[in-house]
Image 1 (cartoon, rainbow over the protein chains, first blue to last red):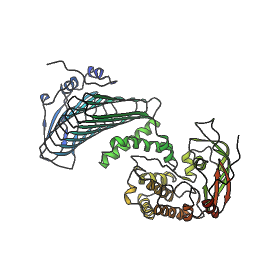
Image 2: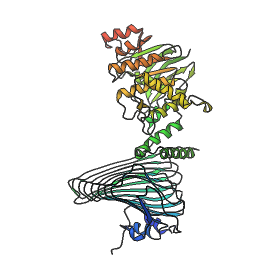
Image 3: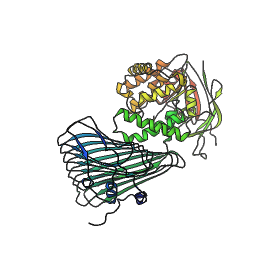
Image 4: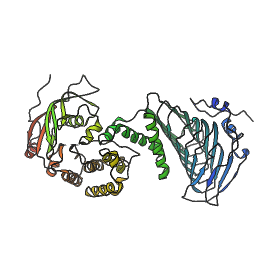
Length: 338
Length: 255
């Protein structure tokens, strides 16, 4: 077996994080609220695919392992709620059966020193998945990799809301394996305080006529540093495929630092691909408009920032969660301005 | 009665200090109870005047003053001017995602009220429903994001909705009629007319007499080359419709 390599994460010191001691004390499994047809059981390391050195690191001495099976043809509009353990990380594997239609709501509010979190979602042919990931981690450092593997004709609409307090790396990986698979990955991140956090969102077209879109939005306050890498890759043979990405970062403080790195790797001719990236400050025209109605600078700023992040979080329809996100934005900005 | 006074106002664009003044000595007094129309060719300073009164940071006042009831606005931030009674219906309202129209309007009303006396939500919603019905706006516009994806006409109507909900002392309406079909124009004018009264004054910027058939002004001013060169009653607008602006004398050169 050839030696495994680390995934590409430009500007994110992944190797340095992995040299530190990972939290390994056992914790309870991921808590799953779902109808009876969905099975939940403890996993073994062997069940988790390992494409790279990071996968191997995550499954080794994982604090818990959970496997969730959603049967073929299963359909529900009520979200399946998956809550990570409060005091640790671990790995989670979700298999979505052929033709199933599900909404996954995955939440982590875990504490710890150096958490490893791995989540893999496998979509069987023609499965349709709406996946909401909400990270509100309170750990010091976390290294997270989430992977979605899409079989032919499957569809994934994925929103990642990164509202954690930890530093570290977060990888969002989508593999469009089967013909006609389609995925959108929306990532909205709020970085504050002294956080140093990097997101690498990778979308790879392996199958023909596959379509993958990345949309990342980040807001940075305080002296936080946020890195957004977007990696769009169309491999040879993935004819008729489309890969698009947009990475936008809004900096609110003088000491805030932001990077937006779009990377496109195209190994096939008959494809379409594009990218856009920007690192900006608050839109003055929007601020002026809101203030012209009497709103204070502080309130107007909060609303503009909310609007900016909304573009990454638009798919979140759960009103309670959305309210929590907005409140977190407001509290963070109030604290930063205090 | 309140008074908005513009005194010998000279204005430049902040980022272009070498550029000539856009406003070159504007004098104008608007009292509550009065509707003034400001007409004139494009590019002669009408919007600059409205934006400068509101406090748009793009513009810098090089001479003169703007006062409400004798108090200068020049040192006041935009939001403080709004709370002092000014409202600017903009030509190009900004679009803001993530903030619903209703939420925004409520915040604007509450910004004018003390923290311990915010508008009760039911009272607010009742007022909003009623005002939207007056403006023939569909219910869902309250829950849509602020101006986002609104058509040109919807944006203009939404400016008037805000005007009617906020009840300012002085409304500056910058080309509120542009891009409106005749039905929308009638509705927008109805909204403005409902505000008319002893507590409300307005400065309406327009190119067209058409709007002034619906909102009959007490005074009409013509601006050219950064100065008001002629003032008259409602009949002046009708004359201009026939003759155009070209025969009017240009402002004095500042060269």
